[in-house]
Amino acid sequence: MLKRNPENQNAFTLVELIIVIAIVAILAGAIFVAIDPARRLHEARNARRWSAVNTILDAVKKFQTDNDGTHYDEIVNSNTDTNYVIGTDGSGCLGTCGSVPVDDECIDFLDMGAAYISVIPKDPKTGTESNTGYYFNRSSVAGFLVGACLPEGEGASGSGTPPTITVTR
Image (cartoon, rainbow, N blue to C red):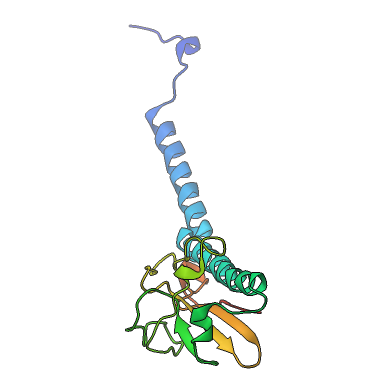
């Protein structure tokens, strides 16, 4: 009969390995649920929307400043207190901005010039060049407003009330 020498048993048993793998899997699952990657993606896209509305409004104000207070032609030709989807689509923008009522014509900032805005930002989820997913309003009282059409809820798994993403100057 062979005798086993206890000094030669340096390996883990199969049961020990299964227990360790199960514990690691349970911890990984708990961390994954706690992090909620879907929620983080919604928050990240909303952060990009905040950045985009600021970029657009900065370009409008910079153009106005550099041209001694004269507005960009598209702004001059727009009606006050009317929301316009920002994009290159000449018409067909009616009803394309979530719950925000918009005019049926888009407003195009692309020809403003690369010195002011080289690329018009697009909504990270639904934006295209013809309909960026952002809107513009020349207020008769409060200056200019730029907003996001379709912000996402930032609750668990992207649920909840979406934030209002607008900037006014």
